[in-house]
Image 1 (cartoon, rainbow, N blue to C red):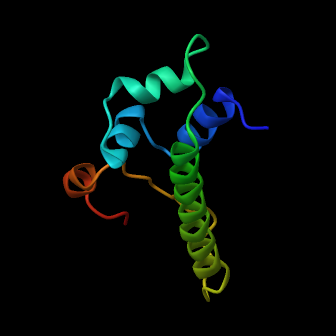
Image 2: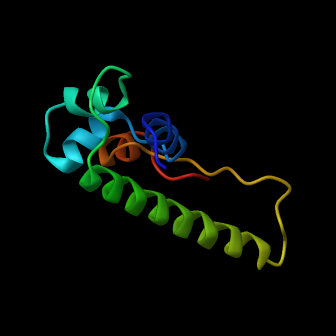
Image 3: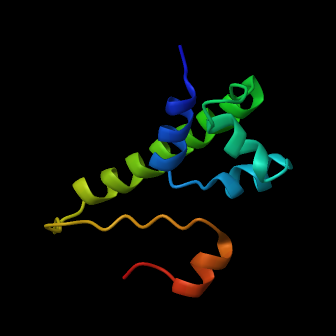
Length: 97
């Protein structure tokens, strides 16, 4: 069974804000806050589907990055995996070195 706490944990794990979810789903900014609030309704199925799609996408990207590192001739000691919350943030900070 999925809970409000699960919803929030997944959202935070993949680096999405409540505002990101609202923007992507075309809903009011307060709606995702309510879904995570103990006194409000559970997140609806369409929100879970969206979040699960984003989680799947996150794992696909992370798996690809890991594969690239493990197959590299000279394996780095550490790998930085930066998540950007928006295109604007990516544009501001640029690509990882």
